[in-house]
Length: 101
Ligand SMILES: [Zn+2]
Image (cartoon, rainbow, N blue to C red; front, side, top):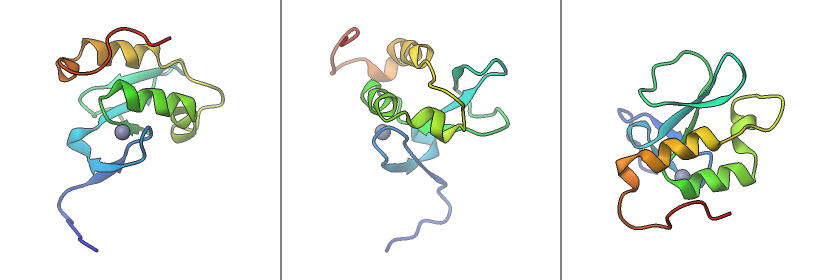
């Protein structure tokens, strides 16, 4: 088992793979209980980590991973996160365009 003590890792709530936190996007709950992106990962409180990849977001949505990770009472709307990902230059290039319905 390889151990890399100086790289803090987090588990993506979508694909469940571990990755250095620098490669993941942090999601938090706003004070009004909505899911939002914590792009700089500086907000206090509980966070959920996900790859900045719409596919991981879809997986997380399907298994309701975000409300579970954030201890939310009900389902969370991922629309804000999806818009963030669609605007992000990380996703320029390959991959489907637009909502998949
Ligand atoms: Zn992932």
